[in-house]
Structures are given as C-alpha cells and as structure tokens.
Length: 517
Image 1 (tube, helix red, strand yellow):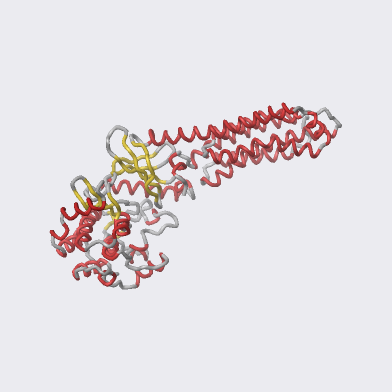
Image 2 (tube, one colour):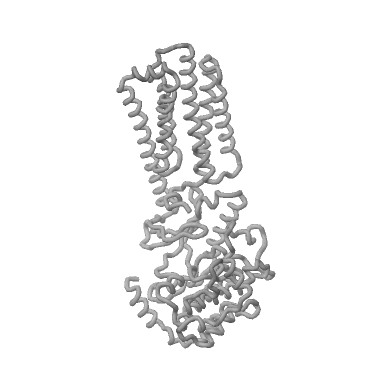
C-alpha cells in the first residue's frame, strides 16, 4: 500500500503518464533533429546505437500516447528508461566524436570538449526534478546517477584512449570544479524542486480539490482506500474523508478499474440514500482533478465494536441487546431500500457518544452493498458480484453467511442477519463463532459446522432466550433465521427489560472509560 504522501499528492498513473508522454515526445523529436544534423555534417559514421536509442524512445512515446492501460509500477520503469536512454544518447555522441578524433591521431583534446554537452545533462536533471511527480528521496536516487553520466563517460574515455588521458592530465583543477559545481547545483535544484512541487500539489488537493475540507490525519486504511480525519474551512465541524487509492483504479484492465470506481460510487450512493440515524451520515462525494475519488462523512466520537471488545472484554447481555437493536434499525431501512450490506462485522459498527446520547450505534462501510430484487441480487453489469475487487472475498470470512460463502444466487437480506448473529457472538463471548487459522477453513465451518451457544464459550451469564436468538440468526438455512432485521430487533427487545441497560448506565460507562469524549 502506498503511504499517505503518495495518495494525497495526487500521484496517480494518469498524472505520471501524461507528464512522461510530454517528456518522451520532446526528447524523441530533439534526438531525431540532433542525429539528423550529425549525419548531414558527417560528424558520425556509425550511428547504429543512436538509431536504436531513438527508436526505443519512439516506441515508448507511442505506448504512452496509446489507449492501452499502463499501471503505476510499469510507468515508473518507463520513466527510468526515458531519462537513462536520453543520457546514454548524449554520452554515445561524445564517445563517437572522441573515438573518431583519436583514430585520426588528434591529441589536442580538452576535457571541456567532452563536457560541451554538460548543459544537456543539466536540463535532463532539472526537467526530471521539476516535471515528474515524485518524492524527493526517489528523485535524488535518480538524478544523482543521471548527473554522473558525463563524469563516468570521461573516465571511460580516459582509460580507452591515451590522448584522452593526456588531455585530462592537462586540464586545470578549476575546470573540474566548475563542471562538478554545475552538475551538483542541478541535482540540488531537481531534488528541492521535487519537494516543493510535491508540497504544493499536496496542499492543492487538501485545500482546494476536496471542496471546503482539509485532510489533517490518516486514521485508517482498508481494501478500497484510506480514511482521513478532516476539518471544514468555515464550519466548526470535524469530518471523515474516505479516499479510493489511485493505484487500485489504475492497476489492471480498464474494466476492472471501472468496477472499482463503480463500487466506490455505490458505497457513497447507498449511504446517502439512507436516513436512519443509526446509519453514518454522508456529507459530500466527488472526484479530484487527479482522479482521486472521495466522500465526506460525519465524524464519530467513539469506537467500533471490534475495538470495544478487545479493549474492555465481552459485553454484558443487556448492553449487547441494546446495541444490536440499533444496528437492526439501520439494516432494516437498508433492506427496505433493497440494499444488502454484505459486510456486517464489528469493525463496521460504531458505538458513539453523540450529543446527549450514549451507546449510540452507527453502521458504516457500505462498500460491498448490493441491490436486491424479488429474484435475488440485481445482475446488470454495473451491479453484479464482480463489483467486488479482484482477489478480495465478498465480505469477511468470520462473519459470512453460508449462502454468501457458497456464491449462491439467492442471497438476500437474511445474510446480513446471519452476520449480525456473528457480531452478537463476538460481543457476548469475545470470540469468533468459528476460530480457525485460515479464512478458507473458517468459511467451510460457516457452511458445514453447527455452532454451540454463546453461553458455552464464556463465564459470563447469558440468558437462555438470548442464546436462542443468536443461534437462530446463525441457522444455515436462511428460512430458519429471523426473516427481517426488525423481527430480530423485536426479539432482542423482548429478551431484556428496558431498565437492564438504560441511559444512566451507558453514561456512567462512558464517563468512566472515556471521560473526555
């Protein structure tokens, strides 16, 4: 996964490709003109290497301007080929001229004659630093060898031709210093320029391209992208921005990129369509100039249920029922809108301190949402199961319904109820329903094995009725589960008394563990 700087700086394959295309085209035309002049003036007689280099650069130029998709990593390789071939082209020109003069017995060669093309190396170094999107560390690793090319060429020629060695011996130290100083300054300009341009681009993305929101701190990363804490420039209101990683869009074939973008849009659209107070609120959605997809959602002052259990241990039955009832309300509205979440898990359910409400549940991350019809999932090209990213399982194995794991076509809202049963199991026991080392073994158990009651996996006292509710959620046959989320909510409500976990107990817990929240 790329670091935050890569993403926020807008370093996408499309940006890098457009920059490299311009550089390659300019260098290609320049080398053709230079080679033509040398041939017409008879300064070189065997231009084979130069012609090969020009043709190679031409092929790269055509590739960059073609419609073929090029991922970010291969583009980095092409970047190095472009600049190294240009540097070699200049060095070969020098080598050819010096060798011709040596063959003719010309001994009046000065080192300044070899370094007549230092300006070309300087231009290559500066163009790389100022024009190619990069980090300053990587720019330094590239431009230092690039600037060293004329020096290496001089050493090679001095060892190959005695006349050249004599010329080097007669060269004043001041000339060496001048050449080294020029090349050193060009390297410094390139590295510093890369850093300045990167900072400017980062500020541009943070301050301008995402509307009124400015990214302040990365707080998470997932299968699709990164999650950042943000602030609004004018409103005193924190927010969270989710960004899709640009290399996911660019890597692979165009169809795969389209599916990934469509999936991100579906997550934003599905979240925005829901009005339940227990569904995370979406503020904005957009695409930056550098094709970074993002959406802005409310900041939640709390922790997800996975963290809750890891930090504080299993949750009391009465509190578990209270939390799950709220999650049921969010999912019930989603199901009424023909949305299936498909990735219900503790990490996607937040328990918050919201205003004067404590233990307020928010369901988030509708990234795997699907639209349901009477006959199952919608199957048009934009909404089929291939919206899931390549190589990523649809859902999370520890919370996956058997029919979802088997890839059956009759997946409906009851798969979310199964997953919610797994969440209940986690809250009550602090353990997964099926604890296995590999995801595949876990999926097999969800399909074949019958789980034991939560009360058998913990020392805490769990009501028998709550045991039955959880096991009913975990039935292999969807027809034997609760048929709707609200039916499950009603069962949970009847299982515990309202005073078992009231506002006073919730407030007391939050003030004890998170007094500053």
